[in-house]
Each structure stands twice: as C-alpha cells, then as structure tokens.
Image: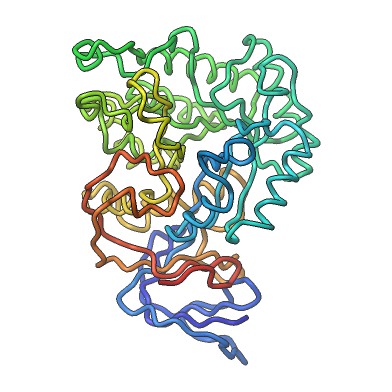
Amino acid sequence: MSLHIRNGLVVDPGGATLREADLYLQDGKIVAIGSAPAGFEATQEIDAGGRWIMPGLIDCQARLRDPGQPEKANIESETLAAIRNGITTLCVPPDTQPPIDNSATVELIHHRNEMFGHQAHVYPIGALTRGLAGEQLSNMASLRDNGCIAFSNARHRLASNLVQRRAMDYAAGQQSLVIIQPLDHDLLGNGCAHEGAIATRLGLPAIPVAAETAALAKDIELVEQTGARTHFGQLSCARSVDMLRRAKAKGLPVSADCAIHQLFLTDHDIGEFDSNMFTIPPLRSQRDRDALRAGVADGTIDCLCSDHQPHEVDAKLKPFPSAEPGISGLDTLLPLALRLVDEDLLPLAELIARLTLNPATILSLPGGKMAPGEIADLVIVDPESHWICKSENFVSKGKNTAFEGWDFRGSVTHTIINGEIVYRV
C-alpha cells in the first residue's frame, strides 16, 4: 500500500521542528517528506489539514495483564486502546502470570498479539531472575534471542545486592539493557502514601522518599561497578532527579523515565481516600512534582510513560491501603502530554521526543523518527478537539483513572502502523 498524507503539520522530534509538509508512505516506510518521489502513485490519501502528524507514541511501561489476569485486561483490549490513543508500541514488564522468564511465555505473548491484537507492536521485557523470585538469574541470552528488549525484576525484591550485581554483570556481558524501578522493600513496608502531612492526617501507612533514593544510590553504585546500561523506571521524587543528574554528569550509562501522572498529581489529590490515587511509587509532594517537571524539561528524565495498570472495578473498591495500586493510563497519555505543552514545560516537538524518539533510542526500537527510510508508525492528531475525561468512555478495559472530569484537548484521528491505517475516526 502507498499512502499520501496531505497538508499536515509535521512534528519532527529528532530535529525538534514543526513544518507544514506532505508525507509519502510505501511498503511500510516513509519514502519522502515534502515532494513525492519519482513514480510515486498513492493508493490512499489523507487530508491532514489543521492537524499534526507525529511519530506513533512508544510507551516504555504498560501492563497488558496478559497472560494471567483476564479479569483486568488482555492484549486484545489494550492494543485497541493503544492505537485509538496514538500509541503504536507497548513495552510489557515481566510481571505477568506466569512471568516472562522463559521463551515459551515470550512466544505466547507474540502469538496472542498476532492473533488477537490490533497491530500495535508489543515488546516483552524479560525477567532478570527466574520466576521473579530474585534468587537465580534467568537465561537472558535465550530471552533476548526470542524477542525480549531489556531485562527487569519489575517491583519484585532481589534476594541480595550480590544477586543484583551478578545480574547486571551478566546483562552487561550480553550488551543488554537493565530496567530498574528503585525500591527498598524494607523501607516500603506496607506503605501506601507519601510520608508527609497528608498520610499523617489520614492515618495511612507512609512510604518515605528514602524507599526510592536509598535503592537508587545503591543501583547507581552497581552501574559504576558493572558498566551495565541501566534505565531507571518511574522515578517519583526530587532527590532521585538530583542523583540521576549527577550520575549522568559522571558519564554513567544511565537513563530514566517517570509516569506522566506524577507530573500532575500530588499526595493532596488523595482527598478522602480516593483509591484511584493509590500508586507505587506514591504520589509525592508538590516539590517533588516540580522537580520531576524540571528534570523532564532539562533532559535529566529522558522519557515519559503511562505506567498503565488496568484493574477491574472491585480492585479499587477496597479501603485505600488494601486497594490495588496503579492507574489506567493509555487513554490519557497523549492528552496529558499535550497539557504539558500548553503549560509551557517544553515545545511540542521536544515533548513528543520524550514519548517517541528517546524511548526508541534507549530501548533500541524502530520508530520515533520522521525521515525517509524510517518505519511508518505515525499518528495524526486534531489539536483543536476538546473533550472531558470520562472513564466510561475509555477503550482500555481498565476504568481506574485519576483524571475523571479533566478537560483535555487533542484527539487522535488516524493511527498508522507499518504504513497501514489501523485506526481512523
């Protein structure tokens, strides 16, 4: 199929530019921007007048709950939610049921996406340890050969610092990326809210900032010892941003993301025990939120992710400390990003780089670039569309949003994957 997209504003995160231009797609690739190549004949056309054309979003942390938790979500429901919201690539952490610690589970995910998915790319992240039990290393070489793009133990505890060092040494020898969500489980305890005045007033078990920063300090030391290329996921506090900034200044091979909800919400939003605000790491203070925003703006934080965690209704109806943590984020990732542009955190092209080019570069994935020869994973957005966030309208099976009633702008009119239109309004 060949496709001609006319009259749109091309958002180029690589060059951090915006320009009005036509795009020409053929055989799953961008073949030209501006003028048609010789002999090009379009089999389809899209008039993108008044709209933005940008790379498809790459979500570097999204739980699809498949295999193992069909009551929450599955590949069919969540890939549909992805393409309708401009997300063309989903990176799945290894804490599925069973965990992604063997080639059979990797193949099952690929098979289910091929059979039931909606053409979004789904990339598994392999387990660092067998069964995520934190004791014996997984066969990373086999997992990598079967399609795992990186390795992580998700939020599961490692048995010791020695196990972590051996895992990072092994990954470094395989030239594989390690993804770590820094978390000291002893300091985490049974906490469910940021340690501060709000948790005290509500009588909620608290999670100190040190639950993240103590682990991050140790993790950075092990990066320096092993040389393992390491990505820190879902940072939540000001101190972590400072530590990461210093690690980068030393030239260590580190990168990081934060969940986009952390840039808007604080522990004050818990209100009267709103379990939709229960996340791990928890919503932190306004100072932490502002520091995360500064880290995104200056490039210390490389990527933004949805940290998508869909739940069935009952999982959030329990008392706050007993509810399951997480927010359903696929339906709100792009509109929240565009709100950051409206709030002048970053220009549009630079902000979109945090959701496209940067994760593609860190995870060694195709996509994120607007240039001839690049994969034609694209999204067309109507920036003038305004809508009210209502969970009942979510495409995701998970309706557990922290943004009910928010006024958003920007909606996807077309999603294109490998040069094919997989969604249109």
